[in-house]
Length: 434
Ligand SMILES: Cc1cc2nc3c(=O)[nH]c(=O)nc-3n(C[C@H](O)[C@H](O)[C@H](O)COP(=O)(O)OP(=O)(O)OC[C@H]3O[C@@H](n4cnc5c(N)ncnc54)[C@H](O)[C@@H]3O)c2cc1C
Image 1 (cartoon, protein in one colour):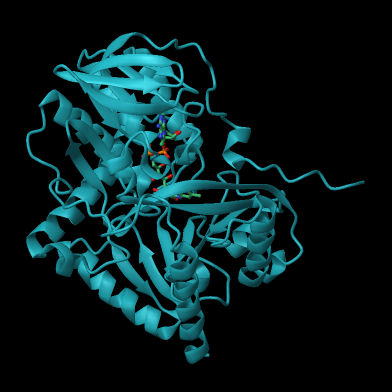
Image 2: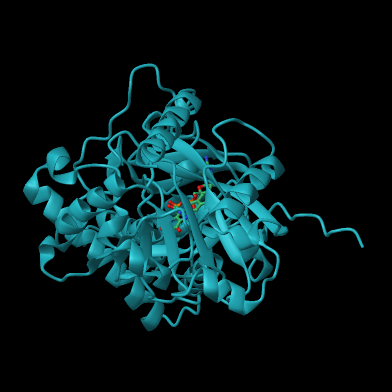
């Protein structure tokens, strides 16, 4: 019998599909217009609606069809925000400590929300293993661990090579770092839970309606969309890696980067448990990284990363990742795939998320890789507080300069060059360590 075709959509959509209902007609006016229906938009809209504000969420795609139902479902606090940079050197000791503490607060907030709001999304606070591909990477992780543990809670621990088998059965690593306060969830179920709360609170959803431009009108704004105009007192942008020319100032400040994930065919549970014994997330310490996790039922492995910096067909990216998976986990060398998908993340030029307002338009943008579940949910909520004027203190992410670069208009033409340079340096590190 011929193999079933590989579905080019998130494995998560087997359980919950983004809602494409075009119920919401665009009203002529709203108090707050939220652009983007991912975690940022929903967390902002929920907080506003519960405070009695009339909120309309518009999205160019179906509700949640952006990265928020496409990600790997890894959650963490401080380890999610400063992976790529020396935070203290970048923003000073005081701001660095405030950022790390706020990232932890954001993770606690996520956990509280799931519990208090009874959002069933297979959340498992199971920790995360960060694998060192070379002894030098291990030493770098040791230094990061010291920085992260500076709060005295010892939530990070080194795992020497001889103990790594407790977390992952691969020869690709030489030990690594354990993030104890981290977890995994089902991203589409989390998103659906938020959307249900929003609906209950009276948020109006208008999917499949791209905003084409936002102009000032009187004391408020007028947004021009594919389906007519809408007037709003305030506009909140939660467009992250999908930010387009409707917000050209922001578009020049974010680098959209796609990441691809594959799902294996159903595997014997024993095999999944032997490869990922702790059942949690595993991620490389490399510059161009790969990551792996079991699905919540422990019957499939999801494996992802930057398959290619070139614009090649999705199935080809899936095949590249399938081969990488076979090297990472040799027992899966001949595994078949059921799904391959991709999504867009937003990087900023200083690798830090941003919240603020530009010419009166409020925004929370820039997840910088895999920290968006926690950080964008949190910043979406903070965005609502800014609009309501109820924040009791500014976010540590406010007031950071939102930089662009000369000649950058939002299309990262330099990615294949920079990305392949990073990949080459990873390769060189491994050659030297061999
Ligand atoms: C493959 C992949 C794996 C990831 N893994 C993880 C992970 O394990 N853990 C983690 O924490 N994060 C992860 N992330 C990042 C995380 O998914 C994002 O940070 C998060 O979902 C961002 O939420 P958001 O609401 O800001 O943006 P999104 O969910 O991307 O939503 C933005 C929305 O804005 C809409 N939009 C844009 N422009 C317009 C316009 N002009 N008009 C109307 N609508 C518009 C888009 O259609 C889109 O739906 C991953 C991302 C990807 C792609």
